[in-house]
Image (cartoon, rainbow, N blue to C red; front, side, top):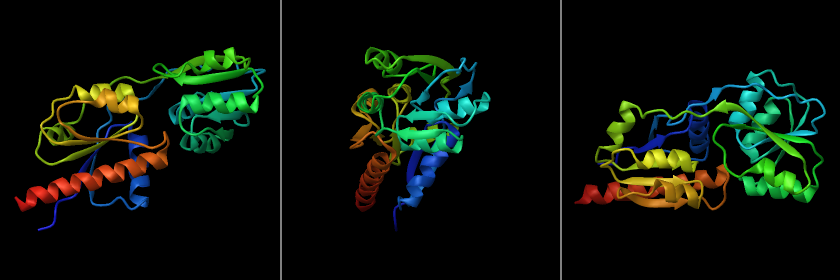
Length: 245
């Protein structure tokens, strides 16, 4: 008898989880049973700051772009983004996007190398890493920041809890240390295969039920797809070995 589909626990906000699942399926990562259980919500708070005289916007998440749009942000401005997925969201919002390669460090380095003109505004959530505005300002690129959305924690769904306390392997792609920390505190009995966006995420997710923490080779979506695919393959091997016992 063939092994059942591998449980795939997706913990990002609903739209981001579904987008990542679609990307996985397009990449041929099949034989998965997705469980979408966001551990973080995104709540638009606003307000937008005064953007008159601003030379460009900085986004470290597609959530910032969506909040900007929801608050009535105008199209047309340059947008400097942390990665390509955020750049796609910015382009869909009518902004002129320029993408770095995946994390805050890459974004700061790109703007410093290109000598981006200020003033810039970093539109971010209430929880953010990288201290982007200060680092850019220290590099003589005047940058302010504005918190325009919140990221409250959500409890896991009943399906997610049942999977984590079951016997089948669970693959869990995790994208932020904050989500990983909350995930690590959840009760578990199942063998867990974490696909981590970075070493910091893998460290935050650590625990006794983590069988294999995979870390993406680069902080971008393509590398996370590859890492998740590897974790699915490892989970299926474990399931197959169990089936032979």
